[in-house]
Each structure stands twice: as C-alpha cells, then as structure tokens.
Length: 359
Ligand SMILES: Cc1cc2nc3c(=O)[nH]c(=O)nc-3n(C[C@H](O)[C@H](O)[C@H](O)COP(=O)(O)O)c2cc1C
View 1 (cartoon, rainbow, N blue to C red):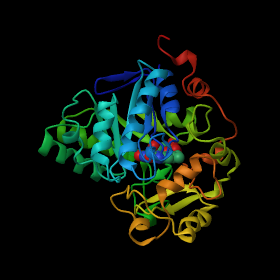
View 2: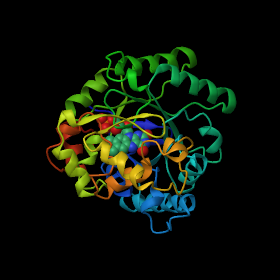
View 3: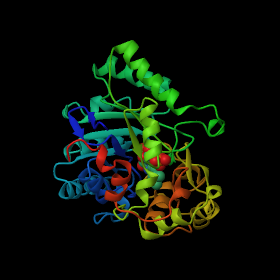
View 4: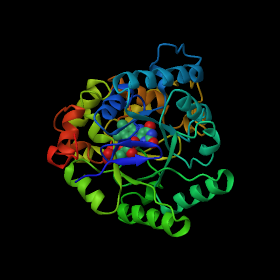
C-alpha cells in the first residue's frame, strides 16, 4: 500500500509534489488541480509580473507581488483544503519579498533552489507553520544548508528535494561540463542526504527525488531506492490544467529525444530545454537590442552585457505560445509525451485504485 507524504504540518494522500515551473507553466490552475487530486501543488513564482493585469512595463516587482497573491488565492479556490506551496528561486532579485509574499498569501510550503536558500528560515520566521524545502543536487549542498540553518536559526528543513541534473527540466544545480557524464547518481545522492541527516542530526524528514520520473514504474523505482516521494514537472506540462499555452504543450508532443538539450542561462546556470530554436531565442533579444526593464535576477549576463537572452521574457513568450522565439524548458522525458491528459488521469495511472488506502 502506498503511503502519503507529510512535510512539516502538512499531509497529502500521495507521495507526489508537482514541481514549480516558471514562467507560469505551473500557475494556479495546475497547482490547484494537483492539490485537489491529493498531491502537493506548487506555483512557480518566477516572472509572474510579466503576464499580470497590473504590470505596466515599469512596475515589475510590485506587479510580481500582486500576481503571486492572486495565483495563491485562485489556487485555493480550486482546492480550498489542498496543500499548495510556492517555488521561490534564490537567483531572483526580489527573493526575500517573494518568500514573504508567499507566506502572507497562504503558501503551506516554500520550495527553494537555483542557489542555496541560506536565509530562508529568517525570512519566514513569522510563519512557523510554513514548511521549508530546499532543492539540492549534492549531499554537500544539503550539508551546507543544514549547518547554516542550525547555526543561525536553529531550524531544520522540513523536507529536501534532490534534483537530478541529468534529467530535470529548467535550471540545473550542476556545472554544464559535469551534466550527462555518468558521474552523478541520483539515488546515491538521495540516500547520502538521508544518511547525513540521520547520522549527523538524528533527523528523519522526507527526501524527495526530482527529475526523470514519468510513469508508475519510475515512481516505484524512486520509492524502492529510498526516496520518500517524487517531484514531477515535465509530465504535468502535458495536462489540460497546465497553465502553459497549447503551443507550449504541443512542442512537447512534437519533440524528439534529440531535440532536448542543455542551454546556458543568462543567470549563469545550465538549463534543460528544447534546443532546436535556441538560436532564434538568442537572436531575438540581441537583434532587437531589447531593453531590460526590470533587472529581475541577482546575476544576469543579458542585463549587464547583452549576452544570451532575457530569460524571463523568453520563458514568458514560450508560455504564451511563441515557440519560435520562446524558451521551452523541459525535462529529459518530454519526448515521451504523446497526449494531453487530465491531472486526474495522471494520478489514476500513478496511484491505481487498488493501492489507495481509504479513498
Ligand atoms: C518548464 C519547466 C520549468 C521549470 N521551472 C522551474 C522553476 O521555476 N523553479 C524550479 O526550482 N524548478 C523549475 N523546474 C524544475 C521542476 O520543478 C522539476 O523539479 C523538474 O522538472 C523535475 O524533473 P521532471 O521534469 O523530469 O519531472 C522547471 C521544469 C520545467 C519542465
């Protein structure tokens, strides 16, 4: 029988987190429906301002805050009793405000990567019921975070997501040249994190595997290898409820294994995406010399020296259906997408009725 997942004070019937996917790929609709179906739904905070009603081209950070509050409110309209959290990227300039806004808007978890979330417990100190979940890709990163949190805040993470750089979508926590070499072992890392927490701190919290989980077999394998649950992104893109435009979903349906590869983000991190249009993504902003209106990242090669592209606009364009010049982030399994399902269908396949405890 499958067991559910408890992170901090929050429990769900299924050991599944839907990974935060920016920009607006996992908005209120996807997160709300995942929560409604018994998983943890995550709204991606990155870049929400751009496509929001209040954005006038100059008020990025104010519009970002309002848009995040709106997304949370609408997600809870779908799943009033669901467990809904926010993915906050350390790399964004308004990280502190995004974290606090998430708490104010009722997020039950903050999942935080794209950098080490060293200050997270301090930012959420007024909201002890909000569970804190760092994303790491190595035991060392987990050690650094736990040591810092203990020393400065006497707080432990409520769970840790271990994200596999060889398979996950979006920004990756590993150097470009070390991805895909065969050196990384996802489940050795999961077990390494668990052993470290147990041996050093006598701590047992859920350690969640993210990256490359597509179907029931992958899920069962992850659980058999020591993970307490999985975080899935790519599979949820090809659902009716996913907040991306139809063209974005179609790009997944159309892509082949060879179309998926690594790009270098202006944030200085590698990312996995559908690569075949990457030259157009680059050329659009460089050719038009697009002005950076918001300086939304702490570190951005486009903002400082017009290198690469403006990532938040490139992701936003893709979300809205411009798959020619938009950046289409995806995990290594996107080529497996062959139909658009509902979130309910995905849950039914992953967790067959006979394995469900009481529902
Ligand atoms: C389109 C897309 C956008 C993503 N955006 C983010 C993001 O904004 N922040 C983040 O921490 N992870 C992001 N991710 C990573 C996912 O949250 C998730 O951990 C990962 O994709 C899991 O691997 P899978 O896609 O193979 O299931 C993104 C992934 C995808 C596919």
